[in-house]
Length: 284
Image (tube, rainbow, N blue to C red; front, side, top):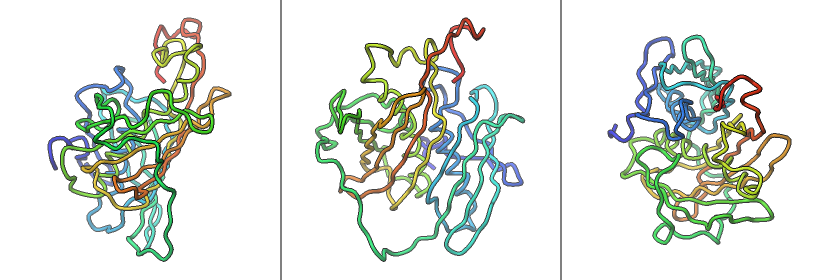
């Protein structure tokens, strides 16, 4: 596997347990394992059995506790069932005896279309060659990123954003492509939801005067793709209130084929750090 994808190279340690590599540094600038990393590595763990020809159809993950980059991360794979067409696996992300998150993953065999349709890609986004280049942010390390919508864009009253991303070259497997794109879906919706309210709070206040964190994340993969080609990720922060944010997204290839859909439930609430005795930064 290319050096850029070293974070997807899990080490099997026996009994369905894998050691996951850590990045050189935090994309968010804090000692909390990024949820996109967990999603990506869980997909690789589910796909690690070479005797199982099925691929990931969907992943639903609950993030229960924050993890640290300073301790080893293990992924435990427990098979729930395995049939000819479908299978399911439960993945637990652990640091020592501490459970960080659990994912239920549905595996599927490849099948031909009987019926086929999909929601069209938005027409108001820039093509990758015209889109605004940016530092990668919370996309997969080494991936290229270009913003396809203007700042503070809205549709139907909800803040939206679209971005193009791709790896430098073709990826060696569908699982690796799914992992790379899953990583890139996890880190944008909270900031997007905050944009209309920047007169009251700012994303820079996260983990200081406001407490933020992804609670659950679900991705459904619909068609095969190569994340070494341009992929369009559209996101909409459709709800903010009661200390929560709900958002969703669609993922297309450059030709407009719908590759995946996702949804996220997150936390955005006020916190009095000193009153809680946790200093000036929170863990979530």
